[in-house]
Image (cartoon, rainbow, N blue to C red; front, side, top):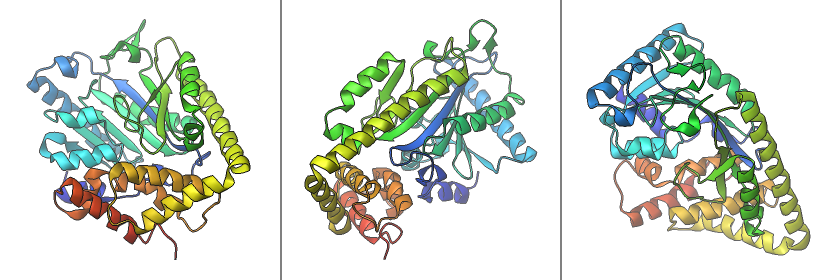
Length: 359
């Protein structure tokens, strides 16, 4: 792909999944469907030689070109990650187009990305293919239709490893069967403030769900954002996995909304004070660390969702999930920055973002 195309992807602060326009978007930021697939006759990536990983990468790049010729999917770009800088890989992670693990050792790895950033395919992560699609709000059913469509288009060009007894063969046993990992990214500040989130997550785990941080496995929760997903895929149909996750997500949505109502009934002044303090900091701060930016973001988003503040562009507010992260701040500045320089640049970016604060 051309450097210009890659730069467009890296600098675009507004992927469609961050629009805040989807169903239940006051609590659910996005829905993600991910499919793990491997190629018949090829060693799993972590057991493969450099030459074997490169062979898989070439096959997927050819499949990508074939889908582009077919049409109907927009346009996909194929990125060879070992030709991309550390900073650019960090930004791709911050945009949720690939995992931190995929960025950490780029040799022989690739990334296939649609022009609207709804679809991305990690090549040679834990599996040969990790196909994912992202939608705004609670859109698991729509996401499944989209993900399986791209899966079919790739399978028509690639020979998947499949067993009639065990389903799709994967590097990790928990992904055997359908290979489907469905997840929702939820923003639950009221449940966190009420110290109820831990109990809810414990109950969700008993229902076969797992809770992770904002960037998935091994990452921390930022800004009261968590990812909830199914734990296993073997022995369950795709529709069952999606239905179960949607049921748990709707319970969390209901409990978060109840907690918000209770806070506004019993502690309105304290909630309004918290929201307006964070609103003022985002508008006025000259130094803003990334963790504080997400904390203030969480409180302002809560205020916007509760109609405490009304002059916030919610789409632009959602974009702060990406634009305040360390890699994106440096990409915007056009150069590497020290931690302090990033904090200064981040504060200036938030203050000056005309798309965030309506005049």
